[in-house]
Image 1 (cartoon, rainbow, N blue to C red):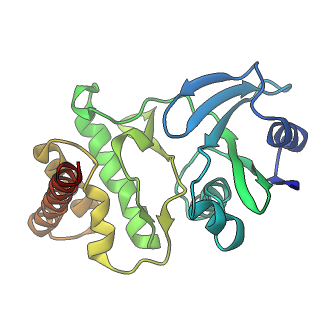
Image 2 (cartoon, rainbow, N blue to C red; image 1 turned 180 degrees about the vertical axis):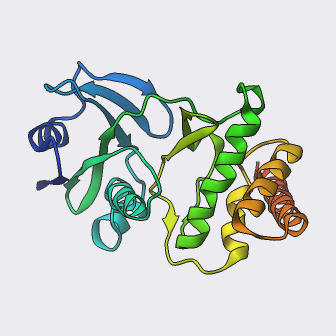
Length: 246
């Protein structure tokens, strides 16, 4: 059984190659544990690096990612570079690595700069959240103008930084599931589906977005709330099927 290591690095080449070959070092600290794990590690120059370790894909994905599609780690890196070229912020990408064994993808890692900012989850509890929400609505316009569909567009995947006088920077993470060159307004509106559990808050964000994009606010709010209803119905169907097959 052969073991091959493949990696790409714009920065910290030796570090990325070492981790790809030997796994996460003991000096790394885990900051998120779930389906995929996220670690932080301080480089020799003091830069704090995030390492996202993707779970081992099951069949047929392990075969597909080996032969037909880029791995999630590679896509995360490529998508980050593409977003930055469009003026959409994301933590600086440093590289990616993957391990293949016996013709199957076994391990994959994405490396980027740590951005130590809070996410916008439960934004109604954030001081001056209306100002932040207005700025977020304006920032979302960039996705529509560039035809970018972020399929994991949730509050937990949006980090914000206040830069004073009611202005904010937003950094988007969890980038492996994205489509580009999307020209369907309806498809792009699906990004409002899981942005907040309360419809009132979704409506506020949609209104701010509409004003920034010079769209009809009332119509845009209806479209956003329709997307929320689609998500609710999808979840109900999914739960019903789970109960049925139990």
